Length: 82
Image (cartoon, rainbow, N blue to C red; front, side, top):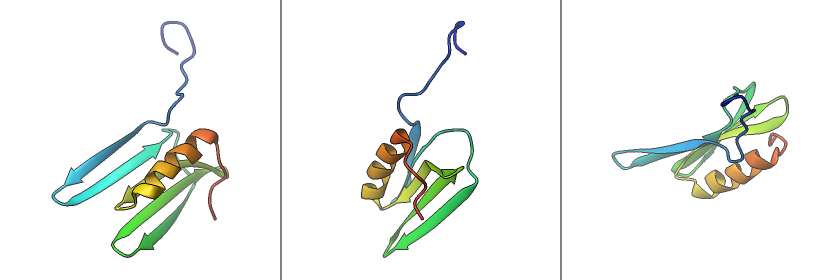
């Protein structure tokens, strides 16, 4: 609640961080998760986070496509990918 009104995010909050030549990028709702799926590709990885069957977060390293797609999926309330 902000100044007497309800607050709602219209965009999933996120961040990215670069350490030396490695960059991690993350989008997620801040309510936690109860399942995750780790997908490793040559030199990159993505971790998908779900809560009660809905995608709520994505963490990506050298996988910009998953990072950008993940944001759209999170914001639309897409099902957790199996």
